[in-house]
Image (cartoon, rainbow, N blue to C red; front, top):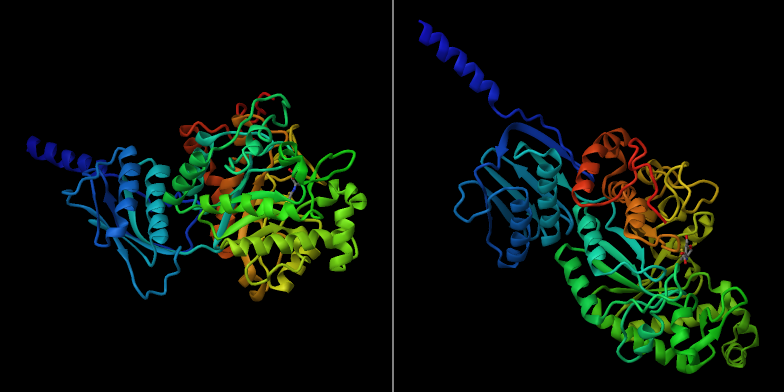
Length: 519
Ligand code: TNX
């Protein structure tokens, strides 16, 4: 009798020790359709990743590593499997995936490896953010709201280097961002080696925004290839920016013969559009750049030329150009320059990307892409869409991360307000009502991190996180499935994840992370 009671109690105890898994989905960006089913899948016994398409070898190895880092044994002989399927002729878009978590088997289906990459990322996040090796069964069918989900880093004003850039690319991939816009040239420094014009880096790479005397800092072509390959493994396209005809001061320090002069405040700010040799010079540079980046686009800037083109008024070459080409003013000279450079890009097999200043320049509408950044000039966005340009939304408010994210913070920009986390999350639905036709042209969203005032790694982390994660959800998750309170409730898990990566993020609810880093 006593024995019976003992076994009875033992049975109850064992039963209650069964892993308790609620079907919660700690996922960011939140998927667009989740259906929970009964039961759990346990990773505790190890798993095999199976696939029949040989092109998936690299992808499976990438995730075998990721799962091993979470303490999960990945071995070919394991009884439980994650099966990867590439479907042909399926209606799934290239970035979409289906993830089915059964009790014994997980399958991920997509029409393209990129979709599989995201499906596996969802699974990895479910494991990582839940902190458990036993996860709820269910079926997720997911596709991003916007095809383009980007982050821009300005390394001209301050240079952070390969290791930091790779860390950011890794974090971007973890939240399904797919485009890294690399701002490599500007007033302060030229950061990409060009073999035909070595002084661009040895001279133009000297100094940074905090220290004019800092030794030259730049990426060699080998470094660039390494970063581009690292990004490609994570389905991230790198779009380089070579800013022109303004923001060219660093280049002009190296090769003053192509300078179009500047203004009192911004000397040597521009290239010289009145000198025919300038076009050949810039085209040779772009040819080298094109060879390093598989991206369809090269970003040529085109912003803020009026900051420093006073000397164009006194430039004989520009006067002759204006007469010859019937250009009425300096803005038309800018437009002419952009059209010429777009032709150069075409000749080397690339398309133009540029800031919204180029919207009326007449560059090709089928192939060029406009980045709308001046939130106070909505007419520029409207003009881009009306003209039929593919457009990326990166308005200063709320997507410039050099703006502070909380009223208590001192170092960072403000402009009739600032850019709190919630504003980032709620964009673009908070400020725009797009028509179906608009949405066909809107490629997606991008956050821009300008670094005039951000000299250290802690500083860029503090400005970027957690805002970049909020933007990742804004860019992926449909308006109907966005939910600020759910996102807000996931933040503690995201902070723990960022802690594990050594990222110094901002958190208004914790005394350590309320503090700005040292300047
Ligand atoms: C404007 S955005 C710029 C950058 C500055 C930024 C600071 C743009 C195309 N040009 O050169 O770094 O403001 O917020």
